[in-house]
Image (cartoon, rainbow, N blue to C red; front, side, top):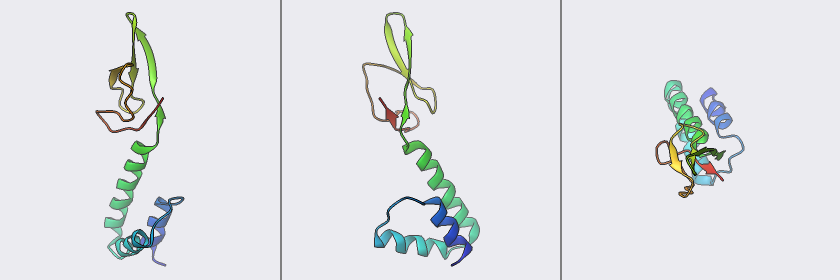
Length: 93
């Protein structure tokens, strides 16, 4: 197995892939090392954003706001969104 393939497999460790997705990973692994490393950086960024994180609640003048744990964006607690509208972070209530 190539170094590129091993790098990709480590980045997606624990993720169940379909046959088509596995073929795509093998194809990507055939590209140059720099391209594969850039692709892995994208995977890591997406993984960071899609992992749910607990919201941060703070009282302010008889109403509550929650703050995105990733970017700090503030929203009214009445708006229970599943994702931050500013950075896309998945939110856990």
